[in-house]
Image (tube, rainbow, N blue to C red; front, side, top):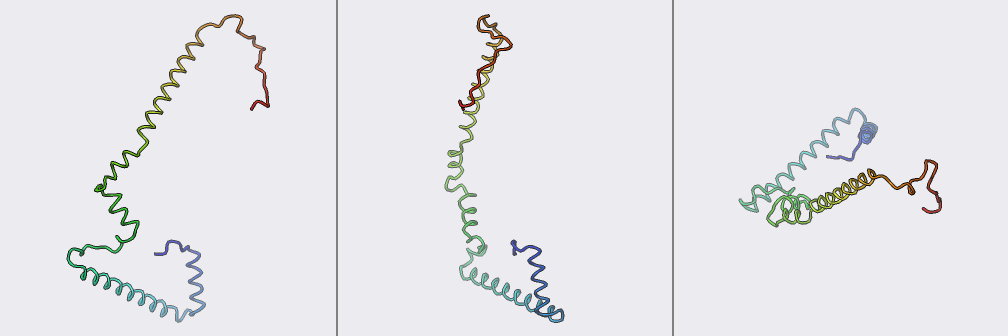
Length: 143
């Protein structure tokens, strides 16, 4: 009912209730509050039943929770396919195109890897082969 109330909040409220009402009157106050909440709940249920009966027999299964905007959209737009939502979702889904592109990129990478391994197998001419002491020049300002 109150999802944002922590244990410390409840403990603080309990201590405050004991201090305000005292341990002798606290059970009586709790009974009065619970009785009041029951009456409010009964009143709201009778009001809902009265509205349903006034709307007629075609609205007997009407739920007031369905009037919440999130529930209304979820129930009538997202779940139902009367508006062609599934077809629109499939048309706007980029997964098929992305998988084609990734397959093409992976295929090109495999082709390059095969070409690079074929180049490594062929012997290099003697004038292009550097000795084991040759190093490439490093320029720290190049980046």
